[in-house]
Image 1 (cartoon, rainbow, N blue to C red):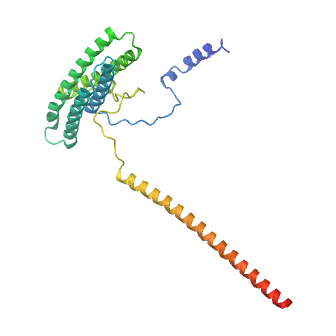
Image 2 (image 1 turned 90 degrees about the horizontal axis):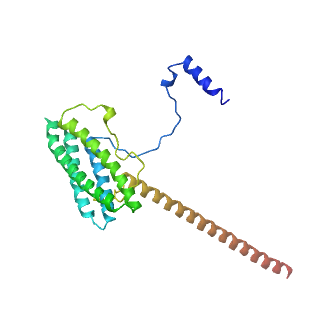
Image 3 (image 1 turned 90 degrees about the vertical axis):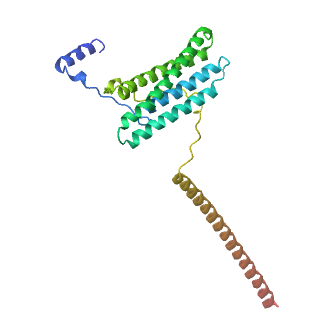
Length: 248
């Protein structure tokens, strides 16, 4: 069969030369939380990862970059939200009004890139024997490359007015299964929605009612059993009295 398989495949290609253009696959879909891929939000995701990884990498060499990391990330979030508000409200010349915050965001990204490159040079010179530092450096390089690609796309599309084909776009910075370095800086934990809280309270109330009803049913059954037992003992006592009276 092993000698005949290539011949069968070649004959199939001869009979159906276009069959190889169509591919059938069997796979499954994994649920992933990916937001709508706008240029500003992708730049924000990339800078968040770069700042987190750079702070962790600097910490391996005795430098504390957490405070600067949080400040730069808050500044990034303010610019991203400003761009999102302008894009949502639109209005007259909204595309022109978006250019200023985009320029500020791209300038901030270039500053972060320059600091990350300097840090990577230090790691490559002094951290050759640290396996964990080298792994962080490799991950940082990956996110620097992706974020630079999105920044170049945004510069061409927003500031240059070009139409970018889909094959040159990047739709998710965090598409790979990478390790989450730390809790998001400057982020508070999300509170549950009011409907979720109401549903939780309703379920807890139902459970309490069920426990209470079961306890009430058990107590009522026990009371009934005691009443029946008392009645039986009373009838036995009267029966003994009547028996003694009759024998007398």
